[in-house]
Length: 243
View 1: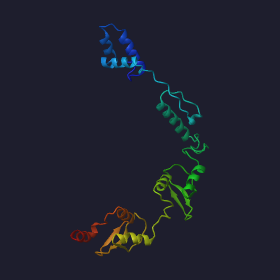
View 2 (view 1 turned 135 degrees about the horizontal axis):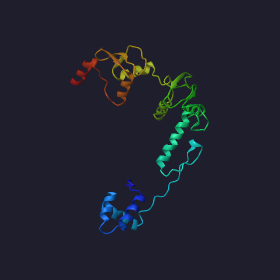
View 3 (view 1 turned 45 degrees about the vertical axis):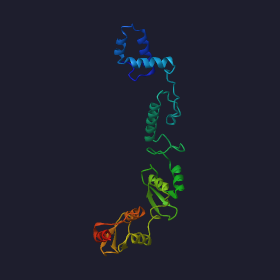
View 4 (view 1 turned 120 degrees about the vertical axis):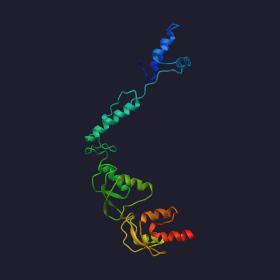
């Protein structure tokens, strides 16, 4: 069967063959095109009402990656796919240019350091290293603490959405803040604090048993209004349940 997608040309061909067929051979036309009489009658009524019209040609999409040449493709999806294929090929060879200013960059880079440096400046950082992509760490210097540190643009944008500003050194918790968070959970800090993900040696203020607490986990549970219990604090759980 020539047009299996039931396009406009296929419908017109079926209607012409069905109308030109003899009364006794119309069934053979339906079997030839693997259709039912209800489908053909629906197409005929649509043509009589003027609803069966040929599709209007779509405007070609301008492709900047191939020098601004318009690709004469009727299908929009195929045009976009072809444009992306051309762009990725030029991008790998370093001929596509920056996606923001158009300046030519090194291969496998979509943005130049000048444009990305301006975006880092809006977040409070100075770009030191060479920017590659959003998921590759790049060396930057924080303007508040003046300390260099590697950071990913993806993480920086997500932190900006949460309203967090500054590097990891600026957002680092002090010992007083750590002691305050642990005190809300009924713990007393006895060991050094490294990061929010590294357990800290603590002592329970109720049962005086040792407890290894992660400050980030405790802070998250306290913000949600949940209690902080562990296996080493079974005595605290039993006393809490009995009360």
